[in-house]
Length: 297
Image (cartoon, rainbow, N blue to C red; front, side, top):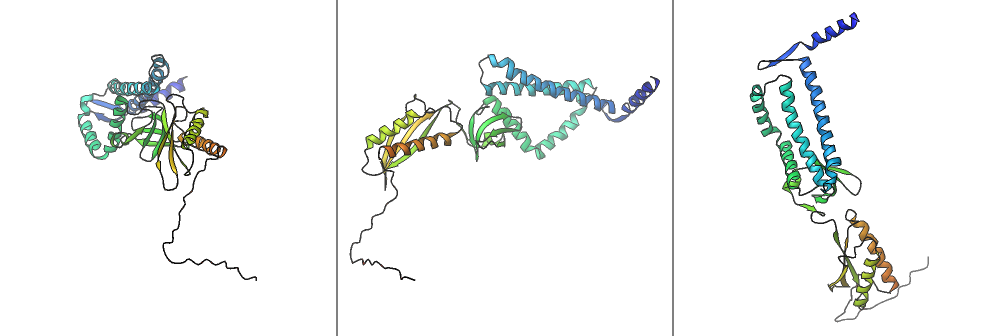
């Protein structure tokens, strides 16, 4: 027991050694350890509060997933800011003595951390204005996918290839963003179709509508529609327009399924899908055609 007390006394003496001063406060090794423990606890508590708000308390309020995550994240930031202030005061550091340090940090932020601060502010703007939210299908630049998480600096977007792309928040403020679910969770698909001249246009319309109605991922309301767009060089141009809610995140899957069904239906009704054709007209002169038999070797 005496040996243990001696060891504890030595550890206490080591931790009590002053390292540097901030104003009138002597910062010891124990101060740093104590500060580190409190900071770790603060991050844990802030994360727990965020989870409890977004996944437990707000689930019964009718808010969508994006709104719940936004409230939880903003609350976490508030808890962290207040917690840092309380922790610094608790360890005995007077905030007024950090004015010079804050000024130096401000200059560093202005010059070296512009992108980080810009992304952080953009993240706050996104959470308050909510041009995008968790669960939305978005396109920004060359990235297309589902918003999985909106963080302080960046947003995680999951593509159809199951690849997570980390997009800086500033891109959602400074660039054009396509949000497929901003107003509603359904999307209209347009499938262009060309048929040979001489085909029955009304039959083509009927067949395309049948294809849409037989697909389980196509909504019955709004109703599918067929548009006769015009007369092409080699084909009559039609367009099948239909709505889907289940395959908004996988548009190519629905388009492929409809194209397969259209091909089968056209074959069943003997509707020809044309290929480019060119007619050669000889206005004058004589074109001599010879059948040349290759020599037998």
